[in-house]
Length: 312
Image (cartoon, rainbow, N blue to C red; front, side, top):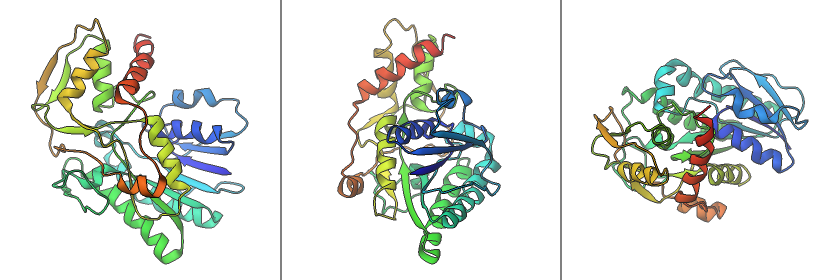
């Protein structure tokens, strides 16, 4: 097939590209590099099955030839990224979404919207099933990301119900792995960068808030599985193994022997979720999907990747 990926130079978009190319598909990558990195796709130079278009999907996009699949992965996805680019984040998850839905309809293809666990906000239900409507502050300091993602889901379902668009929706929980921006503020990469550089590991609050970490290879395999399924409503993708932020910090330190780092505590940022754990029953039943990479294995791979990259 011929596949278009928005946000193709991002952390997830670049790994998804690698997976689809390995399956024999042609991939057209689209990115404006607002948070994506050219280095994430540098290894694809000269690959005849890959083409790249520098473009902001907030502006309608014309693509010559067939497009069988559209993966809408474009958006700043870390608090540092979406707070810095608030208006762009709102627009890529509104105008960008319907522009790519229009393209998908014109090409008679299939569309996947990459939504987020942030749709659940600071949840009052744990774990979070897809049926939970969330607890989101619509004007809070994370609202420029949370609410547009919720809108994107509504937009995707409207196109499906009224216009017959062939659509899929995923809700991505905390994912980690190589190619994350070392300075984007997300917990795992921050701890790894700090541990490798002998800096204090910064834990917000008492560190008892929880996250659930899914390695990137598991996540992109799930994304691809949702696209090729026949299910149109949201599907959670993530690892249901929940642990505290403080425990994550301790695990990273244990995997970086010789680090002189210690753990320090900073005030909690506004609207930071206290718990985050996906209910992946739907993914198991519909896709037969669940994570297979252990956290220790995934963290070790990521540490090894950054051990060289951060010293350059």
